[in-house]
Length: 312
Image (cartoon, rainbow, N blue to C red):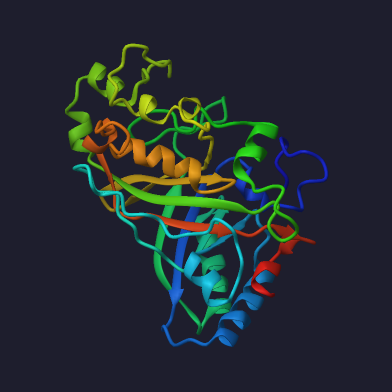
């Protein structure tokens, strides 16, 4: 599959699912090494088996900093997610070794894909966590909604601007077309959200739910004001591909943001957490992140993952 906004000739450089619209359903699967003593040869064999299963569209893959290091890889800018829990809110760091975003239209099909990926990576890797997600209230504008009812991804860059924001360029073969993804599982307190009056809900987000228009006089703690991408120096553009999730009666948002580096996401997250001016994002009053991890999504080469930076 190829996103219609993708420039001609570029579709083989990056994992195309990153640019494509979020699918009806998805699975986020985290893997860790089965044991710290797993040798490098076993890791390389597992990744070699995985590679044919990754088309970059139905299966998007990211590698953690620890995995790149274990293989002696050289990826400028790769690092672990920082713990930013210092201003009265918790923003945890929960690193993982390998991340798979499985995309489709049928959860049963995704289960079978999960099993194929799991078997390809065994015994070197073991599943650490699986989260099922879905598209909610998809609109004509090409955006879904968070479970709070607010549109998600309104300010996403599009076309060439999306490519420029989401993918590395000018770094050379094996790096150009790669992407740096930040992932956080947010758990919503829907009781607390529903207890708010309509105008209070709008001011938490800085937009009116009714028409998605920004509220000019929203408080400085409003989520939109905390994260306006143009308000940073340099501008902090990311490509959001977040999706709602639910498990029994617990629910929230799987936040996923792709960038040419981790810098833009990290600038936004630090401001949300109060590092810039001691004002924390109002979002923390109705939701909290329980995970936080960074991954490097390798580029594509001839329809397969380009793992030259790892010596594969």
